[in-house]
Image (cartoon, rainbow, N blue to C red; front, side, top):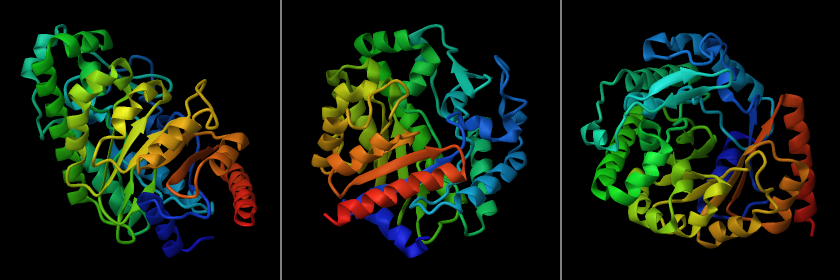
Length: 364
């Protein structure tokens, strides 16, 4: 097992683009639908069941966070467990008034505004019960960690995702073409809300080993981390990305030294614009079910690295060829793998293959 200082250095090397003897390797165990990993969700994961914050009992989630930490402690990898406020809840969408419902797999939000012009009344309320429940989660999981782990930022959907959830995706496309000022105002409201929420989270959680964890992706950093996603950027042209998302991306990340954005291959046509975001240090690229393999994504992954940023590949079940492609086709710096396994035994098998590839590369 790597000791704590070795693991910390591997994470620092990834952020800084230093030489790596192998890609940063972070493991996650369990299902792709993370909401199902918590027993406390079982009564909520019911099709069309409306979920409200008062139905969420934070204490009932803590045993599964402890279980996850104990299981991952058996795997010799580079990540640091992060007990994020339950990442399946659409926290931002709920706080802005979207209807939150259960499904057998996870939780979804439904549009509640009948007209784009209703966004004129969109406001950010720090006392919203969804945000207060989020902060209760963060404080409770950080205390549970007691120096072993802490909380981090879970999935919080970005400006296009959040506004699209309120008005619908078709209306989002129309509004970005016809309602420029209203969309800029609405997008900035979402940025303000998320920055407030994460700033407040850091007031309530403890650092771990002198730093913090990037929630969901479990990368450690020697400072505070901000990350965001814009899945619905897949509906915007490169020109619209520059028009709307360049400024909001930098606004999300302002004042944070360690920053990350989540990207699906469906949005690769906006990659040239994304790599220009000044304050961005890492681009996390999903390997999607039914999407391109890691080997097929090599041109885009190299573009990210050549722009001076690091790339984190996953979070997914990467097969042996995906892992081999990271060794064979990418440089020995600025590369991380977010791996998934069903259980500890499978995780150990994956890490054994990575150790083999590492020895082969280092002996060339």
